Structures are given as C-alpha cells and as structure tokens.
Amino acid sequence: MLALALGGFGIGTTEFVAMGLLPEMATGLGISEPTAGHVISAYALGVVVGAPLIAALSARVPRRTLLIGLMIAFTVGNAASVFAPSYVTLMLARFVAGLPHGAYFGVAALVAAHLAQPGKRAKAVAQVMLGLSVANVVGVPVAAWIGQTLGWRSAFALVAVIGVATVAALFGWIPRLDAMKVTNPITELGALRRVQVWMTLAVGTIGFGGMFAVYSYISTTLTDVAGLASSLVPLALMLYGLGMVAGNFVGGYLADRNLIRGLFLSMASLAVVLAIFVVAVRNPYTALVFVFLIGVTGTSMVPGLQMRLMDVAEDAQTLAASLNHAALNTANAFGAWIGGVVIAAGFGYTAPAAVGAGLAIAGIGVLVITVVLQRRAESAIASV
View 1 (cartoon, rainbow, N blue to C red):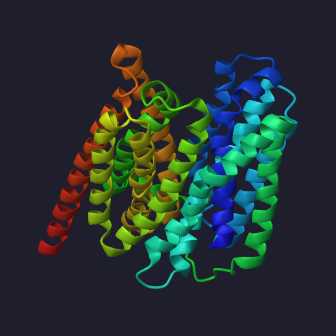
View 2 (view 1 turned 135 degrees about the vertical axis):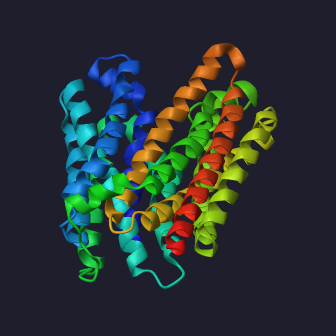
C-alpha cells in the first residue's frame, strides 16, 4: 500500500504544483501568465485522454508490469518537463506526464482491493488515494518552495525523483499478482456500454465539481471576503489538504459499511458545508474551519465513487476504475468554469460556494436516479 500511495503522492504533487509556479514559468519561458496556465490544461487533457486509452490498450498486460510501466512513463514525462527548451515542448511534456495519471490510480485501486482483507476493500482503496491527499499537505508546498527558490524546473525534477523512488518501491514491494484476472481491449471497452458506469461518472463530475467551484478561487475568497492576511493563505491550503487526508479515511470507512449510503452521506454533507460556507467565510476563523471541512466532505466521496465504478463495471474494471480520475479532472475544469462565471456576473466570491452546494445537490439527484435504475434492472432480472 505504501508503494502504491507513493505513486499517488508523486502524481498529486506534479498535478497541483504548477498552479503555484505559473509566474516563474511565465518569466522563464518569456510568455504571459495566462498562456502559462495552458500547461495545467495540457496535463489535465493528458489525464482525460490517457485514462480510457491506456486502460483499454493495456488490458492484457499483467497488473504489476502495468503499474511499473505507467510510473516509468510518468517519470519520463516529468523529466522531460525539466529539460523542455520551449513553451511548446513543455506543453507536450506535461501532456505526456498526465497520460498515466488516471490509469495508474485505476489499476492501483484494483490491486489494493485485490490485496485487501475481506470487508476492507474501500479502506485499501482510500489508502492508495491517501498519497494524493498528502501531496497537498507536504508535496505541493515543498515542491513550490523549491521551485521558487531554485527555479521552476527543479520542482519537476523533485517529482521525477519521486517517480524513480516509486518505480523502485513497486519493483520491491508489489507481489506478482498472478491471481488477478487480465482481460482484453474489447472487454474493457464494454464498460462504455453500461449505463451504470456513465451514471456513476456523472455523479462524480457534477457532485465533485461543487468542491472545485470553491477551491479554484479560495485564495482570493479568503483574503477579500474573510479578511485573511495573504501570508496565511498557505496555512488555509494546508488545512484543506489535512481535510483531504481525513476525508480519505472517512470515505473508506463509510464505503466499507454501506457504499450507497456512504455516497449519499458524503454528498449531502458537502452540500451543507458549502451552503454554510457562504456565511461562515465572512469571518476568518470560521472560514478556516470550513476550508478544512470542505476538504473532508469533498474527498470522502472519492473512495466510494472508485468502489462503485469497480462494482458496476463487472469484467471491465480497469477501464471503469481509470475513468474515475478522468471524471474528477472534468469536475475540476467544470467547477472552476462555473465558479468563474458567477464571479464575473458580479455575484461576488461567496457565489461559487452557493453554486457548489447546488452542484452537490444535483449530484445527489443523479445518484438517486442511478440507484432507482439499478433496482429496476435487478427486479427485472429477478422476475425472469
């Protein structure tokens, strides 16, 4: 589990550190900061493209070999980012670095569930996702500091080192996994014909988008609305990261007890927390408390969504599990976009939280429809 989580730590660090180094990257490459922001989009595009493509094409590859191969590709992409001589080559390197992201988490989740004790599958999956959460507490701040001190390329060099360490850990600590079933590309692509897979992805995209509607603008919200000193914003982001760590444990616990009920509870809690945040953010102390709670409630959805996709995919689990992170990256882009829309419309920086609460409620609505459709299908099969 430590080896698998270490890979998640590296992926989480490289995904978010670029957001804090945009000014340095823009200056170093001689481009504007908005143009440098396209580097983030290139990585996200790599995630969305790579998740289904790699999962389907690598269906016959043994899981241990696939994990190692994905982490080698991730390391190469980050090493290429270090030496990219121009904006175009950096965009290409970030796209390559993003390609293994979704497939790695999908396969790692399947391996964790396979190795877990009975009744603790979701907890094992949550432990893998823990690396992503810890990255927001430790990896991103450290990499950002190194990038600001030694140059932005050094941050990606650190990630490449983490990638090398992960490859070594996977070689040394992951068993052969001969008992894990491999499939074929046609079987994996069959996941795309299952309504329950698409509905679960919609739950994540819409519901999780509510959290990103707030998080994308959290720095300005805390300084302009809560009156928090800009020097304390890193503390707030660290609290959010700690909330993500706690949310992973909570989500794994809930999903192991009752998967559907746990998802309902996580999304309802997120909706309530975001709705209260609209008012609580006007005080710096309550704002910090609710930043932590947003991290907890939002992240608690992730293990449950991962388990749900693995369950409804039947024999196409690799593709379905990999698509979870493609959906979450879509939620990131969608949430940030809609949050920006309401701010640009003049509703202020509390508006994204209100919209986010609405998205969480909409996600609950999609989940209700998903459960109803599943029960009808099960009743139809039973009656035959």
